[in-house]
Image (cartoon, rainbow, N blue to C red; front, side, top):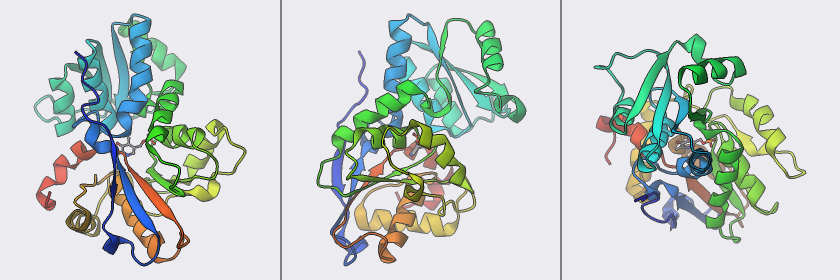
Amino acid sequence: MVTIPKSEPYIQALNKDWYCPFVQEVSMLRLDVIHPVVSGNKWYKLKENVHQAIKYEYKGILTFGGAYSNHLVAAAATANEYGLQSIGIIRGKYASNNLSPTLESCVAYGMKLIFVSKEDYAQRADEQWLTFLLNEYPGYFVIPEGGANKWGRDGAKAIAAYIPQGYTDICISVGTGTSYIGIVNALPPEQQVYGYIPMKGGNYMKDIITPFIDKDQSIAPALFDKWHFGGFGKWSKELTDFMNSFYDINKIPLDMVYTAKMMYGIQEQIRQGTFPFQSKILCIHSGGLQGNASIAHLLTY
Ligand SMILES: *Cc1c(COP(=O)(O)O)cnc(C)c1O
């Protein structure tokens, strides 16, 4: 029996001390609670993809990710739950006795791991390379890295159903931009959606995202790449201290790759008066807590 999601998302108000007296309200949409591994936005992006794979009777899914990829382990768990095989094409080579915690979980969910060099991995969206992979592993439905395809974007629209009208500003972390696109396209234009990019020099995401936005509006001012803390997956003591204090005040655990950097940025913007006083801000907790395993010793939760 399929049991994803395990629980419904809900909205949790942040402690007033975190944002007073600058704005009316800051709350979090807790997508992280829906499942321990298939958490946050990943489920929504995978859902329609897996439905396609089942509908067209593929024997499994084949997807891509790095050693700490939330998408990869979510895909492995989802495939397992639906009785599909799964193959993960992994960026970089790891000995089977030296896997990251994320890759260990992938294996536990029955995912077959194929390790490729960074150069080969760079071709992950290349038609020729995909044809080569499918010759090698026929019968697999290919899901791009991060679930970044039409079905991923369509699936992410479902997140908007959990966003009540009263919120003026919606904040979400951006990796591939798939969730951002789905949410922007599903919400009315008066609800502004901001994307927080955890990659260094992440401004290039603007060109990747823009073609998929239905609305006649520029998204340029709505993407921020300032809070990367050295780059994707990088962190500092300042960030882990922030995560611990955020948990202390709000009792919400953040992940170090995406949501911690976003909330840090939002707090800075709130204090600088970027959001008008009338703002009611809804921050989306996109999950990813499994990725904290490698810094668990630095966290108080
Ligand atoms: C994957 C992930 C994202 C990025 O989502 P995209 O749809 O690829 O932009 C954001 N937050 C968390 C916690 C994630 O795991």
